[in-house]
Image 1 (cartoon, rainbow, N blue to C red):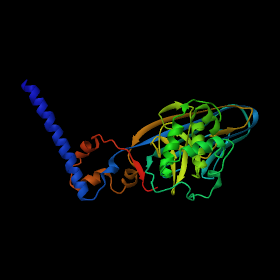
Image 2: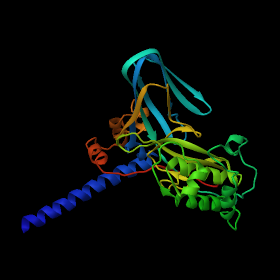
Image 3: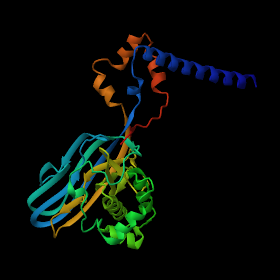
Image 4: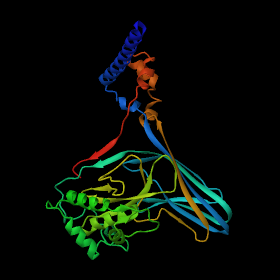
Length: 347
């Protein structure tokens, strides 16, 4: 019994000393205006896209969209392994299109494109002062006009959009009503293209059908909207890509995913590959073609550490603070969980 109590007190004292060491270090860092968050590791994702081809002595062209850095994702590294192909990556209309071409290809070949990305979650607070009917902040008619699969001027869709107009007349309230109406559709993993009208009539759709319906409802009331596509970065191997919607509200393109219930937000594990109603993969006809994604995640030192380590270094930082270097192990081993959320107000 005495030993048990002694061990208990020893554990409590040890814990108190560890917490005291962390508190002491934090106080010293704050007094020096030193940002401790740079010591917290961050999650990065390693993604490999494979394109497998089986050809018979013929010209082969492969195309797919590759990620660009923007306000919520950063491409840290990229490699391309495509023996037998000539590779070219061009940016057009805000998307980066990778193109692989072989003049005469026979047999089975695999193109591998790998990249490491850092992503953050994003959430927008929609201003209640923005009204439907106001002049849109974009002049690109492509984000307002109907298409063969986003039939925003169809009688059924216009009628539905009118029933969703809130008493407030606000864009934020309309966005919520249109989102909830689309989200209520059942999920059906249809292959191929599902247009907005078909999704509405069937009462169920995959992510592309739901996204086209929501885009049509936005456009029907004069809110510019477009599709976006990419990958949900769940570790493992899969063949599934994803689509969602971006609506131009105020001065921002605000994301909406009715399939996975993300209103005016996206979680950290969404990677955008393109914007527009596009097919992720295109290839020459009369060839065998398969694709796949392999995804893993890991914790790495923050970019700030990598940028500053040659100037300061962790050991020199603690030397500067007058803290014994042995405390570094105590501080680094304290588990800290973080999530970075960008909050845009008064959209």
